[in-house]
Length: 547
Image 1 (cartoon, helix red, strand yellow):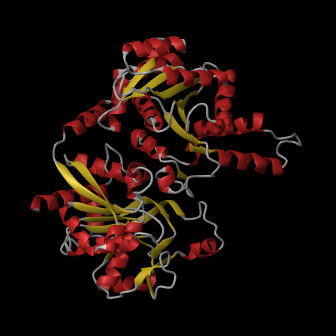
Image 2 (cartoon, helix red, strand yellow; image 1 turned 180 degrees about the horizontal axis):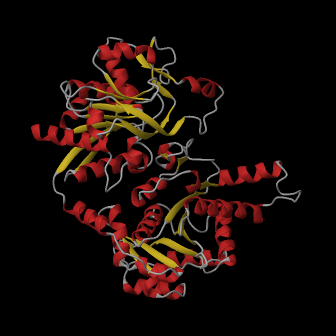
């Protein structure tokens, strides 16, 4: 029997950015997966950066770290949360990667002496990477999300790659346009003209959409669907309404209501299999019905630029997953740490919180305020969860206020500190000195061994775990004995015992005071909350009940 060829679905945006292409691509993966197909998601970004690691979170959103250490766009996080599949280098493409590889091959004479040109060599490299991802994952369906919107100059080589694939195997390559339907306030009527222009832009590069997902505040009207159907010569059932929903986890359920999975499988020529989106549908319904709230403060500093939701998306979703699992919905409060540096009296606002999170970050700005907040949480028995930088902050706070090392600090924040309780990792010294910053941190999944009778062990229920990292600094081994003698417990360590991975206070000293050098938020799932977030939210709910 002839082996069935893989199917490729390209997801592109129209009209404007931030309409939810990533969630749409993740949801398409989810609903096809629920029908019994092996899927893989790819994100292709247009920027010339090799990866997302050197881009400010406030500029482009969270840097999501894959299991193999790839520093990628935040949409890979959505793919993982929706399909529960691990993302790696093969799932992430940038213009920078493409050009770097083409130039490398040219320098090595791998083009056989031919001249190398943007067309066709750049699109061919894009295609090679897409097919490599399919091969590695043995996927039956690959969903490729293109960043940006049609009509943008930098997207042209990627659209050309899709066109070339479509020309070669027209029965295996399909295109989904996620486009925005504006509703002018004065008219109060949905308008399809911008989407029509986006479709025309696709026509101009030799492509036409096979599906149009209509993003809008309210469901797309039947008239709008018919209009768009006529413009792009598609059956009206391929025009999918995607209105705003209560949570992003409603999107796959909405796609089922719009009959997208069945229509999509029919269109791409694959037979229907089992249908199972039951657990997901139950979760989406549960989220809407939860009434009890738990108030969580996130103390950080990336609040003045892009949306906090983009900067800390995995942290937010991890809090959501854990809270929903305990029949609560989080009331997240954003707290700028710099204001505590100017007025310590403002720390009293932390008393109104059920729990406090200090997430990852870099640089000196706002850190003194974070240290004050961490110490306030310790003294006032407010549940505290420190993530990567947040663990370093709580360690500095403990060294200053319990050990009495008043000038304790991190070498990242003060290279001349007399007590560097947080120090540059040995393999990072030369990299920093030579300004070798791209993809040089301690990245990806590493093993960790947990101590028995600790808060961390109680949360995980096992003694060996694997978590993802992204850092250059660690607890200085010279201070570990002093910190432990003063009561701080290092409950998680690298297998060789050298690197401190989790710091905590015992339960008889604090209801929950724990920090991780790794990023547990990258492995939380809506149907399987991360155990540390669950333990933290459980302590926060208990703390709230006492108030």
